Amino acid sequence: MRVCGVSGLGVAALAVAVAACGRDGPPPSSQLASLGAPADLSRPIAKGGGRSIVGKPYAVNGQWYYPAEDPTYDRIGIGAWYGTKFHGRATANDETFDLYALTAAHQTLPLPSHVEVTNLDNGRKLVVRVNDRGAFVPGRILDVSWKAATLLGYDKPGTARVRVRYLGPAPLNGDDSRE
Image (cartoon, rainbow, N blue to C red; front, side, top):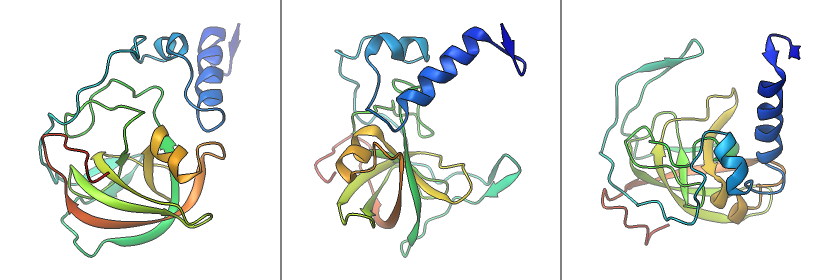
């Protein structure tokens, strides 16, 4: 079966991905495998191992982004979460993404860095490690891991109004004692 140019298998995979994003938490490892993520979640993902980068200007979907150091970064916008299809894959600074770690993707901040995220709908606050590029949906300023979204209280709705405040660079060794 084909629907709008997508095979039935593609529709099924898309349905699993949509169901896994923002409703009842991440899917079991058997479903993660079908989404291209590692099937064995019992093995821990190594922390750190990436590189420090600011990066060159880049475009996504026709929108240009200009990475830069910005010690005064303090913005309010929409935050979302990501994880299932990226779990176990390389981030923009060559770390390995772990949907169970307290990490985030930002369009322009240095990688890796720490930011304080506040869910303005419930007041919950958390420090996360920014080690990826993202939040490429109009109006979104940050994508956090599933674990961070859970602790911030927006894993089930999938998005929330958030405040993001830059705290400074994060260590390359993966030390997550600040998160």
